[in-house]
Each structure stands twice: as structure tokens, then as C-alpha cells.
Length: 405
Image 1 (spheres, rainbow, N blue to C red):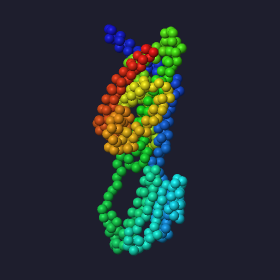
Image 2 (cartoon, rainbow, N blue to C red):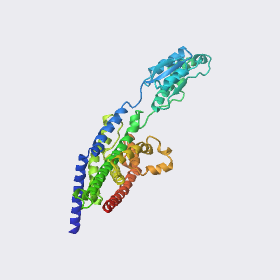
Image 3 (cartoon, rainbow, N blue to C red):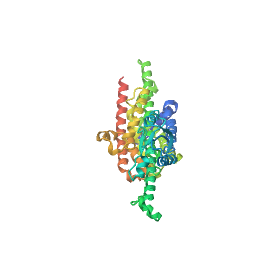
Image 4 (cartoon, rainbow, N blue to C red):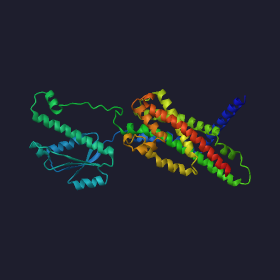
């Protein structure tokens, strides 16, 4: 009978804590922004920026010292490509370099004086392509366009000199070893399909850190103000509730509140946003649910653990914004996981986003099932358990510290 009463008391306490935290969340404009507005709009903004997937019409400068038919043909073909636009014709490299320095052009195509003469003499000719390596997508567009044009012109020269009789002979002459290029997973070859899935998972963790940290800091500041005003008397009911939040019951109630909100947010971010912008999405609904469950829970308890160390509202914003980009690199999406030093791989294992991003990218982009991401899935459940215990200890420590003060 006592056990039943204890369970009932726990359940009532969890529900009360859930209701209190839910009311607090919707009354605090800052927390509401990070829990609702940012997850709602930021994925849309980020996805909209990368909707085109690839860059088009990248401006380049041409320095044609040859002034020959071959160089003009090369320039015409480059300008006709979808990725490059010949925007400037310069008299020398210094003039073209100045355009690149002013960011009016992002690459230079240089033809030497003997460009066509060398070809006519049965010698190897050269065309130099200079790219601004500060923009990797621009570099890719310019370099690949120049390579494709050079390959086509090389094939035409080979056919002209081969003296073949049939089209099949011409094909074998230009491609004695043929190949088929098949882009797996990221079939569009676009940057959006490459980076967006990882960013979406990071948004879930980072907004949770911001919202939970902001809420905890607000409660702490409110308690300190009331404690100072009532130093000689007993704290009021709101202060007592703030202190009571250190208990496991209140912590579970708060966690349930965050989970209620982020069950909807996660479904929107993971399932709705990619389809709105026609990004690749090979997710299986059941596997996605079971994978997102430990990711959201581990992120919640991770955020609640760190929130105990937040003293002022501004601190959490500075901390989370500072760590967002490093966490994306550590996840192994923007930078290969195998190239990350071992020390930083151990550091990355502390964050739910690391395993969440890796697993979600494989499920979303590669069509992996839950069994294919078993390592990440188990790691997220381990983090959920570890950060749940850490959150209990942190809340207990904070409650004892508040009571002593």
C-alpha cells in the first residue's frame, strides 16, 4: 500500500513539475524563442540558402596571350558551361589578379602565346587555371569546367589525327578505357544534401542547450533575488519549488516537459524540412523513431547537466554559439572522421551530437537501417544513462548549495 502511495506521489510530482515547467517555458520569451522559434525558422533559413545545391555562373577572368582560334573555342565552351561565366578579358595576369583580389572574379584562365602553335607542331600545349581556394565550391566549379572543356577538345584533336572510318573507331580512340561515373548516396553532388542532415541534428542539441540553460539561469537569478529580499524569513512557495527542482521527481518532470516539446520539434526538423526543400531523405519511419528517441533524451539530460553550471542567462548563449562549429567538425561530417586526431575523437564522444549526426546522416542519406548504425545507437543510450545520473547528481548538488546559502 505504501509503495502504491509512493508511486502515486511520484507521478503527481512529475506531472506537477511538467505543468510548472511548461507554464514557465511559454511565459519566458527567451526560452520560447530557443525552443520553438529557432528550431522552426533556422532549419528553413539554412536549407533555403543551400537550395541550389551547387554554385552556378562563377565569374572568371581570361588572359588570352594566344589570340588564336583554339583559345577562343576554349573560352566559348567554358562560358557555355552552367558553372562558369567568362566575365572579364584581361591583358595580363596582374590585371586578372587584381580582379580576384577585389572578389570580382574567382578564377583566372591563362593561355600562353604558343597555345595553338604547340598543338599544330604535334607538341603538348598547356592552359593554366588559377582558382581562389578561399571558396571550395568556386574552385570545384572552375576546375571541373576547365577539365571538361580540355577533355572534349583533346578528344576532337585525337579524332582529327587518327584517320578513323567509323564513329565506333573514334569512340575507342578517345576512350580506350571507358568508365561510368555513378554518384552514390549524394546523387545530386550538391552541398545541401551533404551538410544539411548533420546541421539539423546539431540544431536540436544546441537549441536544447540554449533553452534549458536559459531556463535554469532564470530560475537561479529569480531565487537569488528573492533570497536576498527575504534573508530573515523563510522562502516563499516559489522559492521552495525552485529548490525542490533538484529532486529526481522534479528533474524527471522537467525532462518530460522538454521531451514533449522536442518530440514535435525533432519530427519537424528530421522529417519535414528535408522534404520541403527536396533534399535526399531515405529514412525509414520506425527506425528513425527508435534512433531519435535516445538522441533527444541524451541531449535533454546533457543540457540539464550543464545547466546546473550556468549562473547567468548570457553565459549559456556565449558557450553554445562558441561550440557549434567545432561540434560540427568533430561529428565527422564536415571533416572526415578518420582524419580527426585520436584525442579529439575521445572528446567528441562526450557530445550526443557526435553519434546523432553520424547515425542520422547514414540513415537519411545512405538508407541505413537501425541495425546498420548499432554503434551510434548503443552509444546514445549509454550517454542517456550517463547524463541522467549526472543530471541527478548535479541537481542534488545545486539544491544542497542553495539550501546552505
